[in-house]
Amino acid sequence: MSTIRAVRGMNDILPAQTPIWQRLEAVAAALFGSYGYSEIRFPIVEQTELFKRSIGEVTDIVEKEMYTFPDRNNESLTLRPEGTACCVRAAEQHGLLRNQVQRLWYQGPMFRYERPQKGRQRQFHQMGIECFGLAGPAIDAEILLLTQRLWRELGLGEAVGLELNSLGSAVDRQRYRQALLDYLQQHREQLDDDSQRRLLTNPLRILDSKNPAIQELLVAAPSLQDFLGAEARAHFDTLRQLLDAAGVTYRLNPRLVRGLDYYNHTVFEWTTDKLGAQGTVCAGGRYDSLVEQLGGAPTPAVGFALGIERLVLLYEAHGKVPDGLGELVDIYFVVAGDNLEGQALVVAEVLRDALPSVGLLVHSGGGSFKSQMKKADKSGASFALILGEDEASAGALTLKALRGQAFGQQTMASDELIQLLPTILAAASN
RNA sequence: GUGGCCGUAGCUCAGCUGGUAGAGCACAGGAUUGUGACUCCUGAGGUCGCGGGUUCAAGACCCGUCGGCCACCCCA
Image 1 (cartoon, rainbow, N blue to C red):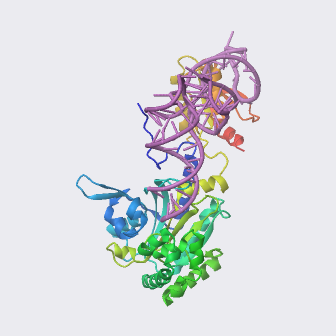
Image 2 (image 1 turned 90 degrees about the vertical axis):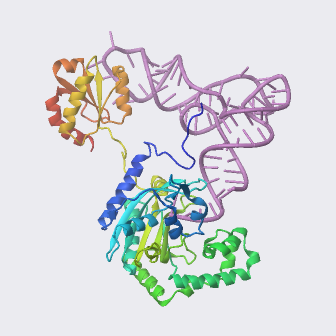
Image 3 (image 1 turned 90 degrees about the horizontal axis):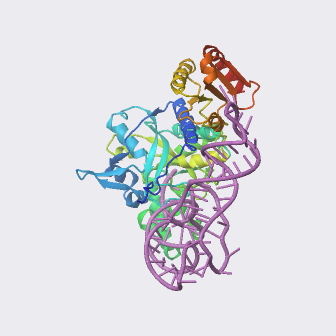
């Protein structure tokens, strides 16, 4: 019989990896909270229509990357390919956006049907924040400062860089789209197949083509910056002043357009050259018309999403990962002797009552004294706690240091041990 | 969806112009009857991704297929 494997592009995150994930998620969640953002949780499945209306009908995500299926009542459902649309739907549905500012964050799996490669899988994970109800550039600056602080706390300040652009208002963008189209159509024969296709679907995406010949052609193309209206220009200029004043360095990238339809004004990406082709770790921007598009009142909004898999890769290779991350066991309890397992469990519970923060692993399943000591060593524990025949008859326990501390090995009554353990463990961890 | 490279033990890999599978690590037991690490000995572990073909003979060659990695596309 053939074994069942995980679905392509959907990866297990194994015990060797989860401490890194927990660390990243904990640091980010604490940071978001410290800026006044509250967590929101929404379902993994939504009505298909939500994504068609928000992300855009002609985007690759909607056209060919969504996991879409009919529910048993034939309603079309979709595994969420991103979080922003879901967040807007949830916030709007529950009246969170009525005349008020909301600072929200979320995390969880997203699904896109793509060929897996480095930094990209079909189930991937994002953390993101969305802020509703603030139209000015100050909030754009705030979330960029927040992300910059996150990189700094993880020791990734040198590994990522910020790229920034403004798409202008929807009207600005429409005017520019036409001008770009006019230009590109004059040079149609020089466009590669992909760009020819995008001419019809999403011409702005031609701007960030990786084809050098296309980039060459674009040098003489009309620039989006020249099409920004007064309001858009003022918003962007003020944002840049705020970033300069706050010491955020960035690279203006007039070719940065982003793939989702709902963005306007500020767009940004934090990128790295250390992850291969998928170098975008965190990206976002302003989407002032999305709430209205989804049936709510006009509500300015800005947010970003960061890809946790990519952040994990970057953090492992370039971040400051704390020593001992993921080491759970302080004490390995060796139980050597017939019929002592029950007694060991009772003693262990007493120890846990007295010292709830201590990691205590009780050996189970028997085995020789020697093999238990080997397992104690392998567990990474600082100490072996031994209950054998001698200890049992003396009403005592033996504590043995495994990591070359001066402590050595001592046998004492369990009451005394509980008294002394906090001091002993503290001394050992220094 | 397209392209390149790759599938041999739990992991990392060797296996020559075809001749019936090996190493290191990890795991288990022992040397050392209640003391881990270092050392030494021993053991267990494989339908060589799967299916077909060529051949006296295929892990190796051919075809197909599935999977993995990387890149394109696209995106976090």
